[in-house]
Every structure is written in structure tokens, then in C-alpha cells.
Length: 332
Image 1 (cartoon, helix red, strand yellow):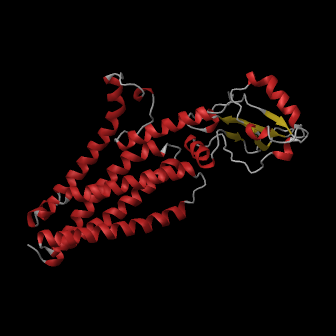
Image 2 (spheres, rainbow, N blue to C red):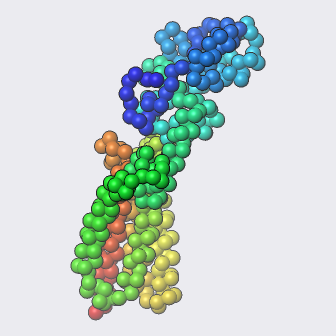
Image 3 (cartoon, rainbow, N blue to C red):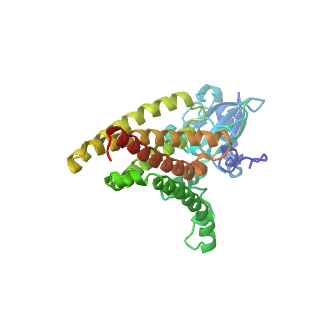
């Protein structure tokens, strides 16, 4: 196991060191003999990793392919030099992505000098995959924190469950209080156009759903691509949000015109949905990057804050837009 300590969710914390590695120049016949004599000393034997005298990774050979080549050939004659590698601080979710997308049973981990530190074997990759899937499931259920032992059994104590869930509910309570105070300050708008109250849940749902999509995609993109271009990602998300907002706003305008025969109500709803969806996408996309820059796990921290701020923004946009348009059209 690695001697240097790395964060639990990184490749450096997941590597093993008992695996076949040989030097450049060794013959296939000698390698096969070594594998046969020392097989019990290895934790896994899926690939043969070739390094130079400085322990720099130069290539890899599948054990299955090893037996198909000439015995007098050297390892560099048959090794593959186009390597799929990870670094010690690579997020474990990317390890799973690299293994699945490349059809590999193990991922080598190297440092900045390309020295081979260890490998993440297939059984570890499967455990990581299972953990990441469970985390995603709990996030969809509104539990935004690391999945640990408290969720590996149904026998968890009530104290543990309260401790892990209550903080995020408290955040939601404060967000709800802020949203309620905003609605209260626009009571006169509801008195003039009572139908606006009926559409508040619709706007909250649309902005929340789009925001959740954006947040999930942002966190996943950062995990899969550590060198993700923030500028190009934001440009793409803005284009997407503009399209989604236009479609939903137009649809709600049409439905309001058909169901309520009120053009002003339709305009208020259409513009409010348009602006709230764009704001929800931007908020939910920005927060993961902010928390990552602060060295906080974006998957844990961004969910409750982005949801709270998105809800407050949606309510503010909705009733502000209603107030302005009611005054513009002279409705009393």
C-alpha cells in the first residue's frame, strides 16, 4: 500500500504495489519464468508494467497477450506505449470512467515524473463504482454528503440519521423563510392577480429541476475531466439554458392563454420562467466550480446552497416581474 497519505476519494489512496513490473530489455521467456515463480507474491496479475531504471513507466503488456509472442522477444518489442494513466490526486470517479471507457481491468498511477507508483486493480474499481452509484442515488434523494458506513446498513441508529440529515434541512428552512418573506412583500401583487399564486409551484419545480440537472452535469464533468475548460463549459451551458428557458417560457405562455384566457398572466409566466431557468442554470453551474476552487467537495457542498439560492432567485424574479408588468399595463 502507498506510504504517502492521499484523500480517500483519490487514486493515490486506492493503489496497490504488489503487481508484476519488469525492466526494459528483459526477454519474454525470462518474464514468464518470473511470473510463474513469483505469482503468489502479487495481489493481481492482469497486466505486466514495463519501467526503466528510474522506475518510469514505459509500456504495458496484457498477460493474455504475453503468451502469444515469441519467447526470445524483449518486452519493448511487444509492449503498448499508448497508455491510460492516472495521477495520485485523480478523483476516484475518473478511475472508473477510464477503466470502463477503455476496457481496462486496472489503471496505473504515476507521478509528475511518470514514475510508476502503483495500480488501481479491478476489484477496487468495482467498489469505487458501487460507492459512486450509491452517492448519486442519495443525492437524488436530497442527501448531499459522503456516503459512509451509516448508509451501508439498515441498522443505523436514529442519532446517526438525524446527525447526517438535519443540517441540510436547517439550510432549507432558512431558505424557505427568505422565500416566504419575499412573497409576503409582494402581497399586493397577489391581491391584484390571485392566479399568480397557483403557478408558484410550477416555477419552483421547473427552476429546481433544471438546476439539479446542471449541478449534476457540472460535478460529473469536473470529475471526468480535471482539465475542463471553464469558459467553454459556461458558454455551452448558457446556450443550453437559453434554449430550455425559451421553450418552457413559450409553452407556459400558451397554456396560460388557453386555460385562463389572460394574456398578461401569460406574459408574466413566460418571462418569469425564461429568466428563472437561466438563473437556475447559472447558479447551479457556478457553485460546483466555486467550491472546487475553495478545495471543498462540489458534490457535497453545492447541492443545498444552489437549491436554496435558486429558489430564492426564482421567487424574486417571479414576483418582481409580476409587479413591474402589472404596473406597466395599469392593472388595479
